[in-house]
Amino acid sequence: MAPNSRIYFDYNASAPLVDEARAAMLAALDLAANPSSVHAEGRKARALIKKARRQVAALLNANPDHVVFTSGATEAAAMVLTPEFTMGRSPIRMGYLYVCAADHPCTLEGGSFTAEHKTQYPVNSRGIVDLEVFSRLLTQHDHSCGLPLVVCHHANNETGIIQPIEEIGRIVKAHRGVFVVDAVQAVGRLPIDVSAGIADYLIVSSHKIGGPKGAGALVAFSDLMMPMPLIRGGGQERGHRSGTESPANLAGFGAAAEVAAQNMEDWGATSKLRDCLEAGVRQLVKNTVFYGQGEYRLPNTSFFSMPDMKAETLQIALDLAGFATSPGSACSSGKVGASHVLKAMGVKSNEGAIRVSLGPTSSQRDVEMFLEAFAKIAARAAA
Image 1 (cartoon, rainbow, N blue to C red):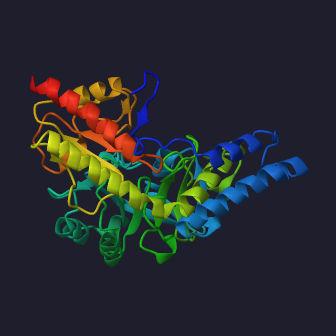
Image 2 (image 1 turned 180 degrees about the vertical axis):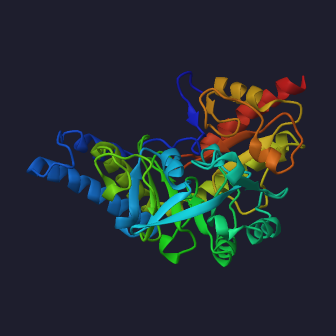
Image 3 (image 1 turned 60 degrees about the vertical axis):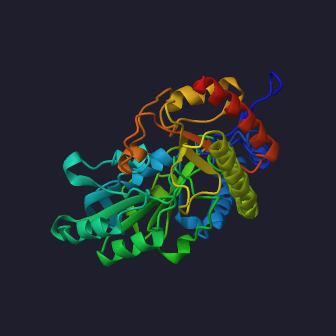
């Protein structure tokens, strides 16, 4: 590998900005007006935001009026994970929060729910929600204290394992619950149809699909029932999220969503590259453990452990060799520790795991170069 060349295999942490998003952002930066202003300049800025709302809605087959822009997925999670909702002028209370043990930390935190009003439901050793235990938990829910609010990730950010969202949604509805789906890793990689009514709310992020950081959305199936605003003020976003919107960030988000919708089928080629990488790693180190292999999972994600080598050691070695990978979730700057996802799956290993997440620009040559570097690292470890 040339001294200054690098290969990016960390798409689950953040996807590179797509050209269309960059162009949309640069054009939007020329508009100085506040999008809430009623003069011509303000209306131009407002038109960019309306276009972005339509583009994000189209990717999810949602009603544009049901897209609430936020600063990112973490804010969207904090907004919707609250006991306090309204239906028109009538208050609706969520009595208890049920969150998947393998969820992303932004939903595991539980938003505004106190510790005594939330619980985790388990996944099995395959990383799939234990539907029997989950259903039993909801059967025991006391509706006198409010509705059950359930949150679950569509696809796991570490293993790539895809949850049976339709089955989970049916169980939630059967128990008169409200269902929030963290779709951050699934959007743009899997077809998602909000209009099907499986989920009441979706959490999405811009920078996971090639848009800018600092933008996300809470997308609702219907706006008849909505969470109380997390951020109050000037009443932007139809009163659901106050604060002056960023036309540049949202224009980039919208452009990335449009590109993602057009390129959905390209992920099939990415899955072949992922499978090639895994086959090569296993050939080099026979007892490598791949988590989620054989399960329905994202086409780009490989999460594996090398025996007798800590994940952070392997990640550093790969970084020095020119590859951007991750020892699990990149949810906290500089933070490396045991994977809560593997713990939820009952994995006892203390080595952790390395996550390789490819993208539409990844190539066969990239995979071959990765395997060449991996072979050298494995040889040094065995020496």
